[in-house]
Image 1 (cartoon, rainbow, N blue to C red):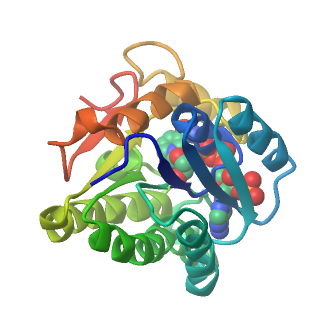
Image 2 (image 1 turned 180 degrees about the vertical axis):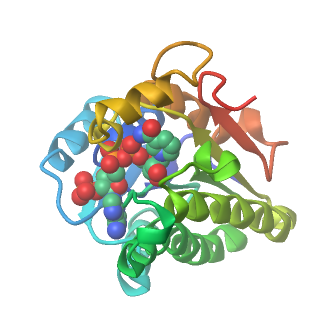
Length: 248
Ligand code: NAP
């Protein structure tokens, strides 16, 4: 069972963007929030301070989700300091866009390794602890394009589709141990990732949003906070779209 007064929460890619908003949405008295980032983020200390202002304990670590050794250390530190893991949010992700026929193998591998293999490694290590405590919440950040596909994003949409398969499989394997596994699928959310897109691509994406605007990181974070809460105890293996209706 979970102790309602103490929660240990892990968020990958938690220093900025959607990950930072998730850390802040989950932060509060009794929470210990461990987040990582890689290769470096000047926002990390600021995110730690914001978590502390919200009443939580904060530990930001520069370590890549692609390293099983580093993720084991990252997760074991949380367990040794707090004795448990209640929530894992697999949020770290990158894009390396390009048309399929021109896509470099290294761009395919980098995206798959961070977006999909990283979530697998963190889930594998965290789930072992959650299984022993017979409680856990795992939330994966996929994407609308993992369901719809998107020209120029064969690697990214492939990784996010894979994450949906991982979510559903983990949900089936871990349900009997009191662990739920769900995914959020953001559409077009304002962050450094989308700020880097050319104007033409941004506008084309926005035209596909029935609600007529880009989302904010907090729009995603609120849904993650719900899935991490006791109120979502009977939901597992689901993909919740947070996209202003981009995919209906
Ligand atoms: P972002 O602003 O680019 O932030 C990415 C975060 O991931 C940063 O904290 C970054 O660390 C971290 N990261 C990157 N590579 C890592 C690695 N190897 N190991 C650990 N951390 C790593 O991205 P975002 O827009 O917030 O996106 C967050 C998630 O939502 C991603 O999975 C993304 O695919 C997904 N998503 C976003 C959108 C959107 O519209 N923004 C839409 C759908 C899905 P550094 O700061 O050190 O680089």
